[in-house]
Image 1 (cartoon, helix red, strand yellow):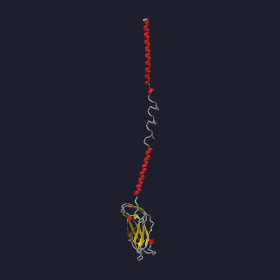
Image 2 (cartoon, rainbow, N blue to C red):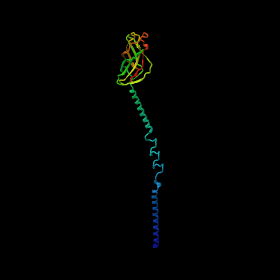
Image 3 (cartoon, rainbow, N blue to C red):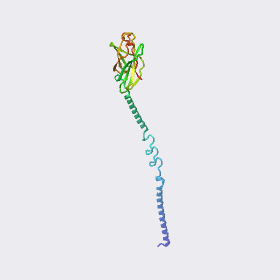
Image 4 (cartoon, one colour):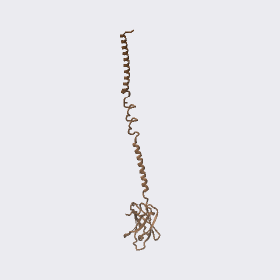
Length: 235
């Protein structure tokens, strides 16, 4: 049987052992908690890590110029195509609206004597656009004179430059016929009609000759002296 002193010592030793054991357990638990709270376990990712904020140029970062955003070159190509298409359409429309030549069949043709005396007479032939739209006239008309003897006198050109004009509906152009006046005292050669073909056309029209007779110089009515000027817009 143990003495009182001996029991007291044993109890004290056992209590110390229990305290040391609890201290050790508490130390491990604190260490685990400290480790869980340590920044090195789940701290902020360093640049370039998979869970950190994306760096410029990364798949999830903001797109850089030339990325899958709006394409500048694509927009320019599309705009250029639209512009080209618009110009072609405008050119086609302009070609479609360009006026045709003035046709003889759509001209009101008349002739008047404008001679002022002297060796040369002048007959002016007017061509009025009687169509509903504008027409273009440029060049020399085709002209023949028919005489009372049944002859046909062809007229040459005087060589003046021919303007290019647009005649609106109701506007007129004209040209002159220059002929040698008969001053022989005889009957000379008497033209009766003028056959007119508008420039660049093939259809003919006929009007009466308003001038005097032609002098006879070579037995053919003096056709070598007959000349016409180019057609030009009046007014």
